[in-house]
Image 1 (cartoon, chains in turn cyan, blue):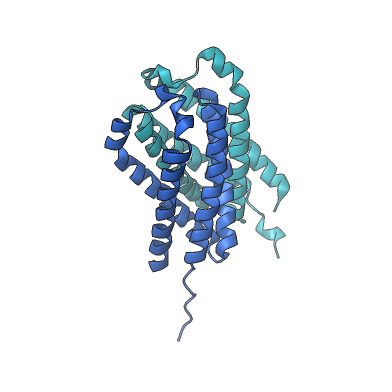
Image 2 (cartoon, helix red, strand yellow):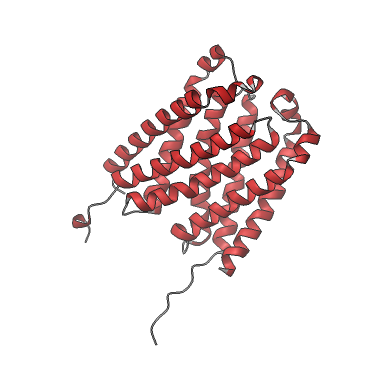
Length: 139
Length: 138
């Protein structure tokens, strides 16, 4: 395992996933989310739990980077983007289950699934591109 | 392909019953503490097919990932994959905890049981799915 490249890939994945989450789920989907206000914490309460959001993204980015690095030791944007799609399918499955048990609207469900597909595919491509072992260094 | 389907079916059966046991029986009281966050029972039942499709999608993607990058490592490789995916999912769960007023113990129980679930799913898939032997000419 090339830990230096792993670290850079992890930082890039965390930065992208956090920023994407803020823009997609926090800004773009703000309207649909407000159709069911009972499901969300108040602004002040969210502020009190913000550290959970940051820590959650750190955990997710770290273990996904580890997964991509183990899955494709040689790296590569294309292969890791494919893995990202498969990982997104797992989260899409969880979204469908959530839709069945929580009063989400179909608009929120579609937004979450599309968000996960974009998020994990791009994150996978980024990790794969950064965590790419130099073939000249391998014997 | 045959082993892929067998691994999928075995893991799906486990995940279905585990989900029912955990969410429908053990955590029932914890869910009852936040009734506003959940659909009424009758509404959930009318959307039950989404639970089945969602679980099938999770298992399908798991077996696909295992088959395309972890196969050959057996049970341990399956367990490793399950642990990696579930800890990443715990990260996602923490994100949901920040935005939805879930009780902390629901996140804790959900994460602990999710870890056990994915370890067993990984073991099942790793034990059943074997990569096809490489063909030799002649």
